Length: 608
Image: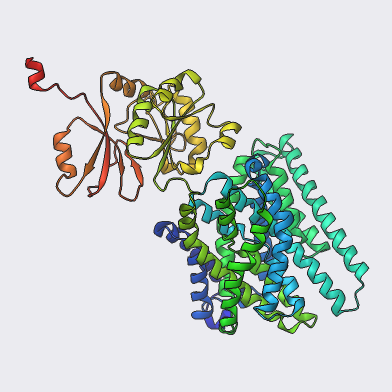
């Protein structure tokens, strides 16, 4: 393995390389529509054990372990921030069963697999088996975004991953304390006392940290510009204090702190969560690169057929059986049980915690514990690749995904909106119209369009609407200010390139022009609400036209010179709305959606 000197990489340059590789892998995965974790693992292995450019242990020294520990703590805290109890409503029973029954059964099944298949001693198997309870929120989150699972299925996997992460770490702590008692002169009473005090303090610190942050932010004890820095400092303090009393209990403390903050309805919660999401993207990519690059060639070479059989046993036996047993006799449909049972990717927490306990077990005389880290890495790599490429097809096969085509959320039940929704439905796209005025939705209901009565920014909408099915938002109410508010608020969720609104009135005036950070993109040829609905009143209609090799875009333009292009649907089911300056792609097997003027009556009809 190359050192800092032989590789020629100073710590700052090595740190930069980790960032470039991590973020670059995520961007490339987005472009190629493949799991980002796969590319990050490959990048880490290439620059680490393959080329020897990056050796984290040599280049970061004693700071490597604390860096990874703090990164994992922040990742788990951000995961806790996503766990709002309102979102748990439909999946509450399943999550409770997975935590209360699934975690102990999974621990037992994993320990048996490690001992009888991988050949580890009972001591190493018990500790590593506890760690294997975790299913990796760092991996589950991007997989859920990619697969577009139905709301309850996604909630089950997300809650299980985040809640079981600290549970798995504490299970490993419990097993480790037992091993220490058996291998050293430590008394059972002292070990049990340390464990109880550690877990109790972690819970207390997590609740205190969350309560303190909520109280300080609500009462304006902290100015707006300092909220994120204060949150970070409190998070680090909670993690460090808890971890000082009992190793790995800090993960439980920060998870509890995150869940507490997520459920106290802070006004600044959304901004805090979005910032933490951005930080987590950087941390996840960095940790994966570091862990992959830190694998030695000897460790990789030790992964033989035994490791392969171990991974297969985990994927097809040790994971599915405990989950199916835990969810048996519940009201969950069998399709959801199967999906959860055969979806168990492992991530950053498993590798980081497994490496730590492997070293400690070796120190107290458990010789085969040095195999824990390579086996953990093999399990993470195999499950990430496997589930990264199979989750979406399996969910589609079980009927647990939203449509693979684009979905459109329309705001406002005007004539223009209903006509557009009907055209989109004819293209076999999922459409819903939302409006806070019940009377405005009558026309949409009569047309058979799915509707939502209420404010799209309300808690009811967040709980009742499965927004995963929709990747485009069009704000088209008669209130320009409300359109701008919704477009601005939901732009981070949908992506700014997927949020549109009708042109604002008096936008040309400098007194009324808004900065580019507010509102959505204009749609069509840039008409206002009144102008767009006036066209519908005059008899203009939305029409769908297919382009082929025989009938090209130029021919369509020649036949429809007055038509207003609205959107283009390609053969993969991706919908692209067009603005005043956007041009459709001239391709075959695509559909054009346009707003066209009334067609003149036929000559024989006029003559009659």
